[in-house]
Length: 128
Image 1 (cartoon, rainbow, N blue to C red):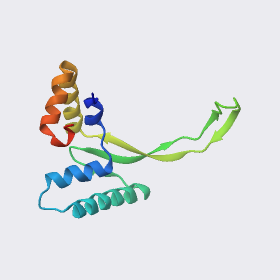
Image 2 (cartoon, rainbow, N blue to C red):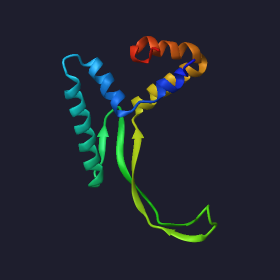
Image 3 (cartoon, helix red, strand yellow):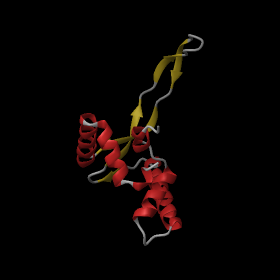
């Protein structure tokens, strides 16, 4: 038996492109692929140059600075290794996205079997 909870929660770039192509009949797979790659490239360039990306209702992408620190090597036990500070990408979900995720998780925790089957009915790509 396939674990449907895992299938529902995981999506990679090619699966995103496939689902978008299925939903947008007027666009070819190649057009959707180009749009997704272009979107990711533009967002990556913006974050790399220190920018901030805000998508209302979805969330905000920004850079957070991790302070320099002293760490211990777990393999050798050596203490006092200096790790320099760095910027890392950060995502903060928007209010609407948080509510939607929370509502779906609340439904899932109340009745896990029916929510997985309901997701399969809504999304034909998930059917075995």
